Image (cartoon, rainbow, N blue to C red; front, side, top):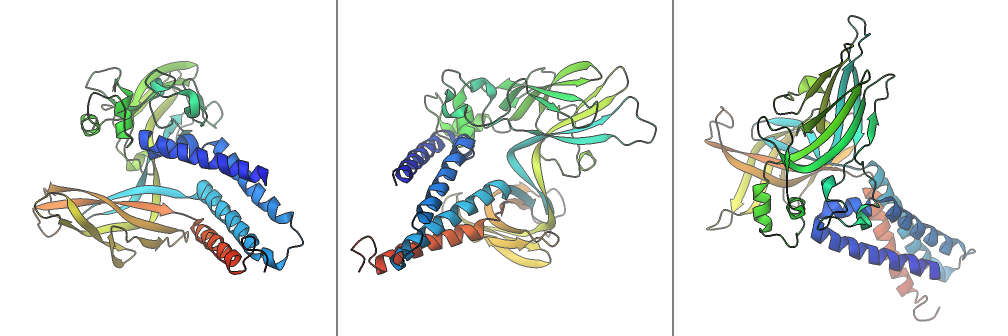
Amino acid sequence: MYFAIGVILILAVVMAWATFLGMQFGDDASAWCVYHAGWFLVLCGLLGLSVLISALLRWPWKKFQTGFLVTHLGILVLLAGCWIDFRFSQSAFLTVAEGETNSVAICPGDVHFDVRWTPADAKEGEKEIRETLRFEPGPFSWRFYGQKGGLAPAPWSWAGRNHAGDRLRAAAKNGPDVEVLDWLRLGTAAAGQEEPKAVEDFAWEVAQAGGNPKGGTLSKAEMKRRTMGWTSWVKVRVTLDGESREAWLRQFDFFSPDGLERNTPSESDRTLWVFQSQKGSKIQLVYAQNTVALNFGVQLDRFNNRLDPGTSMASHYSSDVTILDRKMNVSMNQPVDISEPKTGQVWRLFQTSYGGPFLNRSARMDQRDQFYTSTFTLRYSPGRGLLYLGCLLVVLGIGIMFSMKAYFFGRG
């Protein structure tokens, strides 16, 4: 009992702390440094172990313990659902313009390196070797860790991420080594500028992350406006055939899972880097957002919005879409569920935001003068059923305890 009370109190304090971190630095930052950190998962595991043992110690169970057992079973089911979602869930954003169809969603904040290389001794007709290198930079530019006015050691150093000097090795024999030297969450570069310009104040990155920066000379809205269009940059050192070269790469915002063939990264804006060694080996490197290829397309037939009288603020908006030959409407707080034909995965589609109006420079949407884009959140949650069941069992167990007057009013 003392162990259980201790774990519960620690979890309560940690989650309250994470809530304040989310308010200050943004929800993604608090999720990364607390909720997705290994030490927090250990705390949740200790809670589950405590609940399980407290129930087993009371064997053989008595009738008056029914509510107690149902409640503890609900907690275990709830924790199991959370664990499954943590390991296997997916979340992405899908943006579609009126009159068009899209089937590739992006995962902001999740990035990787797409590597294509051809060895010098490759025979004629052999295809290039393709690899994807995982990269986890964390939520903020590396220069702000441990810096005064930046990020304190705790809890930011407790969560796993890549660091300067990490080598992302290719799996293929004699493959290239990609060494990560620096990473900027927000940066911009003019033509001919060797190194991207980074934000000077940590508060600017906090504002972009959705947090509430302290001590900034500008308002949160002004900080976000000034960095609109800025993106993340990474500095890499590639070693191929014993030769090393360094370069800054800008994040490529859209990268189809089909690879370079479906994309048009450019060397001029540094979204593609090509390096050929003196021995003849050649490498192409792209730093891009992770994407999810859906087995269905979302066609935006029409976007509908209603403004508050006398303002430009939308009071309600929705999207008329066609998915798998079915016409449906997706509106705020009214998501729809889509089952993928091949995998059977159930995606929940939420109406998130919109863009526009934009001038209609092409013959789309019945010659309308303007068109909109609609952004949806896609969520695959394999543990959702267990989450609902666990909550139901907890409430049911508490109800049984009160109805049987167990523990609270004597055994009756």
